[in-house]
Amino acid sequence: MLAFLLKQTLKNEVLDLDTRELLMHLSKLENGLDRYSFTELNTNEANRLKKSFESFKNGLEEKVFGMPTPEPVEVSLKNKKVKSKPLEDHSMIAKVSHEIRTPLNGIVGFIDLLKETELSPKQQELIKALDTASGNLTDIINELLEFSKLASGHETFENVPFNLKNLITEVAFLCETLITDSQVELSVHLDKNLPEQLLGDPSKLSQILLNLLGNAVKFVEKGKISLEAVLKSDQQNRVYVEFLVADTGIGIANDKLQRIFESYKQAEDDTQLKYGGSGLGLSIVKELVDRMDGLIAVKSALGAGSTFKVTLPFEKTKKQDIALPKRPGKSVPRSLKHAKILVFEDNVLNQQLMENRLKSWGCKPFITDNGLYGLQLLENHEFDLVLMDLRMPKMNGFQITECIRQNRHDHIRTVPIIALTADFSIADKEYCKRIGITDYILKPYNADELQRTMQELIAEREKQSEREISQINIGQASALINLNLLYEECMGEKDTLTELIQLFKKNMYEFIGNVRMHLTNNDSRGIGFAVHKIKSSLKMLEATTLAQICSKLTEASDAAAYEALEKYYKQFLNEYPKVEEAIDIELNKL
Ligand code: ADP
Image (cartoon, rainbow, N blue to C red; front, side, top):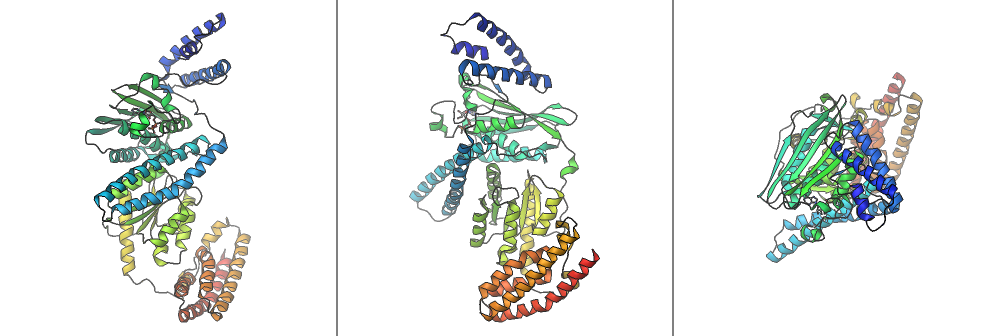
């Protein structure tokens, strides 16, 4: 192909003898490699050969043309990087897309709410148009954001255990939700020999498959789509899995096969007009596959359909690596219908997956990747549950949780939070517990498990609110403090712990003085603020009794109830010396 291209491009030029000879050798070499590559792609030799051939080819192209030629009309593409624009371009695009995405999510949310109101036929028509336009815009913005992240090298790849079968089931579910025509059929086949668990990046794998399946859905009006995962090679520590996404759709002309992997390029000039799209999906897929050390190939015939083949290496893992911990206690399942769920999630595909999944259960999902916006939503709506992606840019899930748990409103502070994470270390687990994450699920999540956990927590919360919860158990020795968490934070350094304890005591004296002053000045807001400032320290020491008194102080300060403020302040004064004594005893024991 390279030889063919060179000949094509140079056809008007007189080739000297050396060039002719070089082309002949190249042609032979390339034919040989072609036979090799996809039948034996997992052999190291083939990959090495291909790599060195490609770097030679690139060097030659640069010499001949001054710049690399486009990829030849070859169905397999490997390690040919999408040409990156300067970094500033990408960070600019990323910034702008991000800024647009937040209000756009709001618009989409409001359109959803509008759809639920009484609308005249004309209004319904307009809303439908708005819905389609905002949906298209969201897709484009999301793709731009994704592409710029990838091209700027800011995208990180995880290496975590995941369940391949669950992932394929979720991807297939989402694909089904995209198929709106009953004349299109999806079939899924998973090789029985594939290991159940693998190590890799499940989000990126879902993204690759969903992009390919999304295209298949778009370009098949009537016919079949299939997703197949086959064990291509099983080596000592790793496996190569081949994913085949095939469709019987419009197909792609041979001479256009190459360009579809380039950014902003579509097969035909009228593709955008007929089918929409930005021409970025396959560039993203190719970049992801390259970065995961995989291969991608496409075969297509116009009018007959296309098959995309992605081969990826994964490390093997043991099943127990991702065994889920047992949750203490059980509660009565309850229907999730109409439950309002706030989802913090930044991965676009996971957002889509979650939205479809929750809607199919009758829930009302509100999805955002923006911590502050989500916290604002919590202030304005009463949510039944929060689903929290822990790893997000800007404010991460841990930080958002801490803000929620320190909120002064009971209904916000106590909302159940389920962490969704692909990667969970023991330290994360401890941290989650400490900051008040109620439960967690590993990604790619198993839908049944998610549903069960959500039902349990919502039911539990309902029961909880029926109980009398405002009792304060003052004076119970066990509720006074626990220095273990702080000691762990100090990595077992007693000196650091002693210093922190001194600081804690100082803060408490300041607090006592400040509240006295605010009470004299009738400044309930000042008291609220003073309480807010010491809350995290109380939590850190698990000073439960003091924390409970502080919750009461917050409620009383919100209501500017001075009598209650006096009462709880006195309780605090009574209680604090006991806590200080308990701290000193604990400290001496360490
Ligand atoms: P987009 O779908 O947003 O246009 P992509 O990069 O995903 O961008 O795809 C680029 C082009 O490749 C599409 O516009 C279409 O012309 C072609 N294409 C991709 N997948 C298929 C398919 N399954 N069947 C037919 N054409 C396809």
